[in-house]
Length: 184
Image (tube, rainbow, N blue to C red; front, top):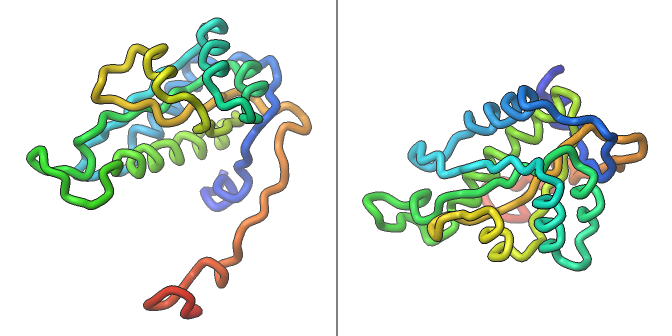
């Protein structure tokens, strides 16, 4: 599959089949995530694969009450919990080098994008879930104090009707020359 097609065809999946995602498929997807760039090659990401249905249920109970991803998470083959070590990315010699104290979010976002695209390439569907009680989930995952759980990624095979068409800004509407609102 061509990269342009993978990027443009990938969709959020909200309905999964009963397909069990294999360890080999998970490893392929995580390997792609590990090749993402990061601040000074800090690679602060960690991925926790959750297959235990009771643990999946507990995690989804920590989603916000209005989170529409709850049902698809319960029906996913697994959850990939994307976590990051804090106070490293965006820092040098222990000192913050950017006004953005959560640079790990950017680095993890790059890794998650690789993960999503690789999953799509091998025929799997995903959804990124961020609306949850992060502290509660952090405790469930037994993360050390200097780590944060950032998103849950339910994964499986997309069921018919499990995706929607996506609309995107056009190039002209999202691109500026030299300063904001100056057309490119």
